[in-house]
Image 1 (cartoon, rainbow, N blue to C red):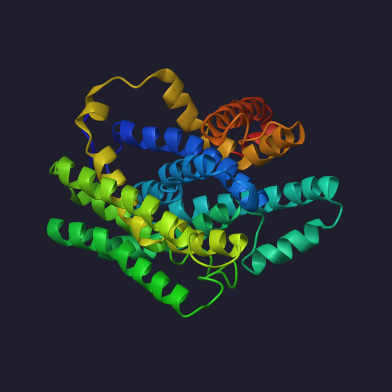
Image 2: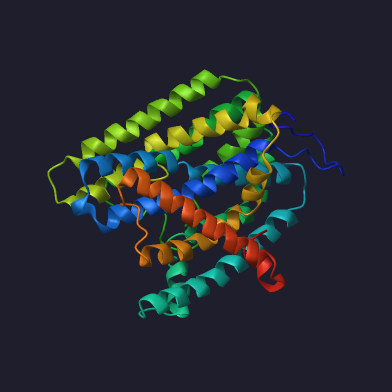
Length: 364
């Protein structure tokens, strides 16, 4: 199997499975869980985290923050590539409609879950907040993804006509331009970045979506050392930038929010650089392309959407039983809670997949 195998015409023979996609999905789903474990620790106890735990949490978050951009890039590679090889937009529009149905269903379910825990919400309120660009904290990804599927058939024909060099340049440049726009947005003091409604929610992520397609089909050469150097530079930049901003003279909660806004947003410069470099490293990895994929990784990749949707239930339950990422310390605790929550969400996914009426709510 070779990475980035693309045919020039429509063929009845399905393209060979590209292992790097499953690796991104499998590792990315674990990364999302770890990210939410970390952010809960920071939000709930910002004023009482020892220095060692701060560095542990920041390192984990730095490693996990690329998961969301990579998921958009993989979606763009798969969807836009298929749209580019077909004149019919039906495939992408059906996927978009399916995702809208899924996210609406889980928006209602999570509203009942929050009602049970806090008693101060309703399904109607959750839907209204989603329309206003503020859905339940992790469901925004599905709302954004649905919109991206709807517009993909409009973008694919033009993107497919670019030359190889143009694809490389545009694939790297598009996310960085949105990153620059985000930096200007932060500097001006605006509160929301394209989150005024459900329609605008996914607009910035079109850059990552298009980048995934352009780099996936347009980059054939290795340049592995270059991508690795960019990734390391971004990683070190995240750690340094977070440390610098956390030492500013302001209340601790404001420092955390300020540092997160500038360093750990999906379009912060370091995260943007690491995401592009990681995608190129993984998609062009000869090791991944030539080694047989472990069955557990393939299965985890297949169930990644279910794990993404269901893991907050498991994480809330784990926290209720005092299984927290701070014990015995953040370095060990985050790892333990991430493993427990991932396995719990995976088990729930396997069970739901066996129920015909619910199977379609956690898979496409």
